Amino acid sequence: MTGLSGRFRSSLVIGLQGIRARKMRTLLSMVSLFLGVLAVVVVQAGAELAAAAALADIELHEGKDGTVQMYLPSGPQVTPIAVDLLKGRTDAVGSFGTSVIIGEPGVTPVNPHGAPFEGRGRGGDYYCDSQGMCYPGSDPAQAATVSGQAIELYLTAMTGDIRQFRPFRAESGQWLDFGSAPSLSPRLVLNKEAAKGFGRYRVPAEMRFPGAPVNPTPRIIGVVDDGSEQPQAYVRADELLNWIPTASAVGGRSDSMQVLMTPTASTFEQILRARLVANGASADQIHTQVINSKERIASQLALMRWVFLGMAGLVLLIGVAGILNVGLATVGERVEEFALRRAVGTPRSLLAGIVLAETLLTGLLTAAAAIGFGVLVLKVLGTFLAGRGPFPHHLDFPWQAGVAGVVAGLVAGLLGGLIPAIRAARVPIATVMRA
Image (cartoon, rainbow, N blue to C red; front, side, top):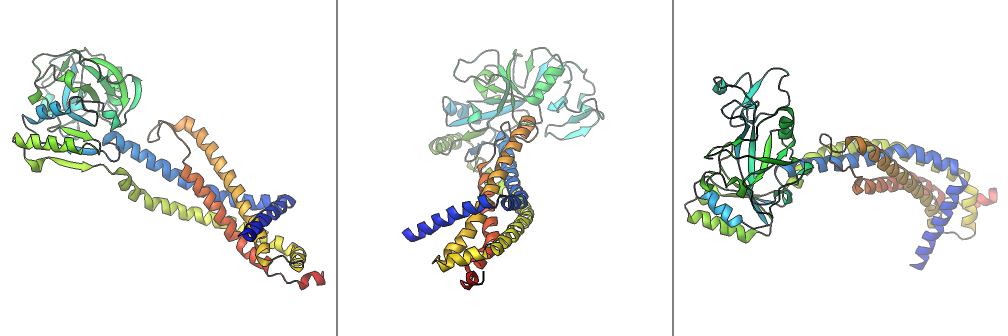
């Protein structure tokens, strides 16, 4: 074991000396290998960033991996029971929604049925039905109604802070405070699409929704990015229930309540299910599923990743060929040196180790340069792309790309130095006598 570690150390030292003695050839080897290693780093970094962007988008719409989703049936007793059981819990959050109109009473909203604002005035008007399907032209059901300053959006009421399951990104203002007493003036947090409408139109602060005997005055306290293209707002459930009966709270485009739970809330799930079934709900209509987004997107991205890695591998082979050519030329020049070392008792394995040490160190240096270049480029691009489109707000260099670069450099050094190492180990002792 001591002899093996001594040979390894000797190979490493002599290899470093060889690199220092032949700087130009080492530089040429690194140049030929740089693009191949950089291609592997770029492909791996791109795959990780694409997976992170897709996962972040899914988390905004559905929830984080491992979250338990529970869909409750419609019924007059379902919402009151669920709201009562969810009160004060931090491991489970219930949400239900309804379509609301904020603005002048008795007029057609500027976006009937909660249609998005982007595109209005370009390419003609359109309308959307209660299922969210949009069609060109004017809504026949709203033809006799006068248009006015009002905005229709989808209002989601929550029993607790839903951001532990769906990580909304704050844009401005503040999020809902579930620790304070409920307000008679419902506090709303808009998504980016709804904020776009309120920034474009001036509407009175009067909110109308089904089941409310009077129209409350809402307060907008913040804006978040929830990944939705439809105008939506979020409100505390207890502030909404101050104005409508609990039994009629679920309506609009949604006819059921959803509960998001941590994996440790299994006891609460059983209690909620038992209470609902005892009050007449059908057990077959209570559906539960666990979010497993990583596995789903991994299968979708795997094929694309392997295709691009194969293309990067072809570029890497060009670098391997460059190391091989430089290695063979170097061994040819050092035949007398290797023969002399053999004559004084140097083992063949140490001669092979010297050559391999040089190529492996060259591969590591190239990998370090490629990774450093990738980090620098991503840092520069991050200032322009972070938070835009599918890109996350923080574009950090993925460590998996660094590992892939190091592995690619070592593999290229091994493949490019293997044949020269074997040739160096086979140099006969008699060569020194001929020299």
